Length: 92
Image 1 (cartoon, helix red, strand yellow):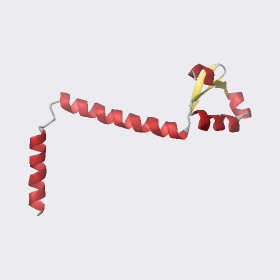
Image 2 (cartoon, one colour):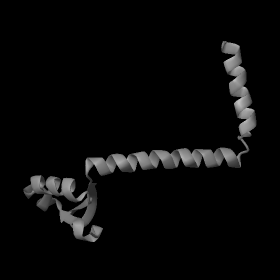
Image 3 (tube, one colour):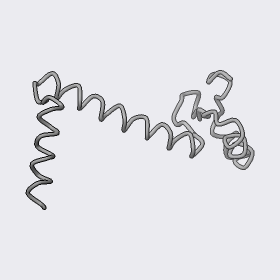
Image 4 (cartoon, helix red, strand yellow):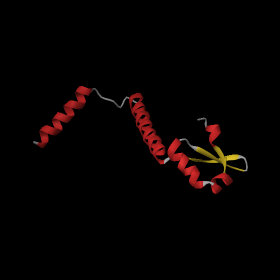
């Protein structure tokens, strides 16, 4: 389903809130709410929202990792394992 087919005026939302919420759960498609012909908000299924937030978090981690690589703040796996072994040896 195209997003353009999911555009509803705020008056529709006010009159049909329970139906809009039910369809969000079924279709998992966002609904764009307009006011005076202008897009103002997006309603989204909670599960889909949580998936989006998890995806964004992973993308932020990936961007941070890429920045660290570009800045030369990386080490070889061998050095990393050596540091882990040394920490473990000090604890025992």
